[in-house]
Image (cartoon, rainbow, N blue to C red):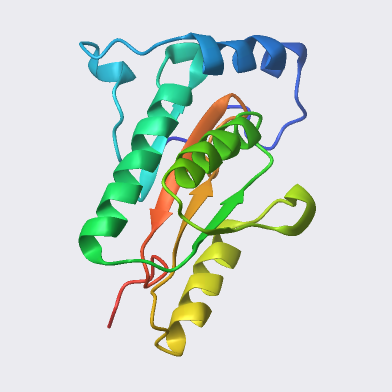
Length: 168
């Protein structure tokens, strides 16, 4: 991955993101299913994109969350789902979209108190800890974060019952 030429430097006016416009695009823009740049694509452990490019919006999140629900049902995962999100501009909107889908599918969720931010490792460790005692119903999770990507990007990662850690 290339390092941005201004990495580590103080932000300038051109670095600033129009958050109201970004949020509007998240809710209004419908991705073109014929455009590969606007489709859901999974990278390292999730999907990332920007509402400005129609590559991360409510339709993507609804589809991904429903796919996770369908996967959970086929895999017999019936415990609650831990859902966390970070401070990126699109994260809370995506979090609410995920909650809509999970609630509609009667998936019980566990979230940080008072809409607190939740780093990826906290969600992963909580999943591993909860499943360590071999509960009757396995627990998994979703983290809404584009990780280290720019402020205008959004992202979502699925962590299965092993918490995203590889088994040795």
